[in-house]
Image (tube, rainbow, N blue to C red; front, side):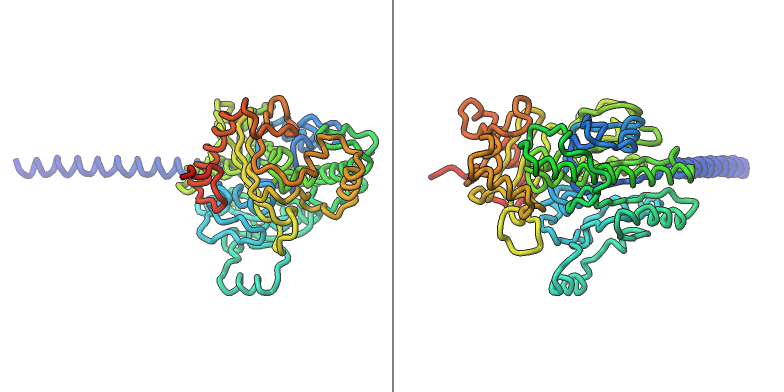
Length: 482
């Protein structure tokens, strides 16, 4: 009987082994199928663009048919904010899914630390062909640095992005289409692609003359004083937005020609707010509130999301699109459910940072300012660490617009709300705004007894966030006096 038992046991073992092999085979086939179905991902960043300055966000003096169509056939996010109001820290947060201070990106010329992983690395490890093209991407230091800085970069191997992606090519906006074509021509046929595409428009200086609307006919937002110089400057800014829309249209056409639109997710976002009054380099709405549009395979079409989303949410969302779980270091929140038409709470609070904006020496707040903000849907707190220094606009401190406003203010020709907003000296260490009744952020409620509880709540939330992120600024709630 022993031989019979041995025979039956052997037969059962073989059956079990066959079953295991079949399960493994089906699993592998499932993985292959999932890889084949993974979409291409195209992340497009414009440079210095705020809400509402896209046609689909309701601004009437723009011609942005390609962005409008992406929104019409995809999802438009009305409450998207960047983590910082300047290029370097904002882009670092978008690519890493982590906060600015947490990843040591609070200096303009700072290179992203090699140990901080980014979207293209995670996707590359998962089988994607990855690339960067367009304007300088800002995460290997700035474009112009003194020799001493470049020496340090070379000595310690701080330039890392050539090791992070398969394709890296930097150039002017007019070169982006050619770079994208080259990238696609080099793409292995068995791999989906991820491309991070960067445009200079609408960054200053403004040069898109043929795209500019008539300044006299502009509908001027109430956040700006109505002067000839303000109208002229805004018209020039809008011209650059019209031009970047044209370039993006060329890229979309290229996807269509190659029959890639059906399997490509396109994400468009402003890297930070516009270099306009109280915009870029500030923690006001114009500095942080940016357009965000998602279009493509499987995306819920023709919808508008009111979810509160942050720049740190882009990375975990794109990874989830590719079937990758959010890695441990990322603090962002994937808004993938929104893309599928499902409920998504978003953030209760959004945080923002203001860090130095120049590799040069600190001479005014256009180049050197430090601040933090936290806000929910109703109230906003701004913490100005260098409150004794007056406001200076980033990227146009010597522009005729600013000189004209300073002159008008000195002559008493500005409305009081603009005079207080632009020229209060000193500034308030804390600013508190009711965003529902005062969306332009003109009436500072700091110190108002009626809002003391709200102010303390927001200070406590910011205080905790700064501790968790090991922020180097003094905390907003000081220790009790002895």
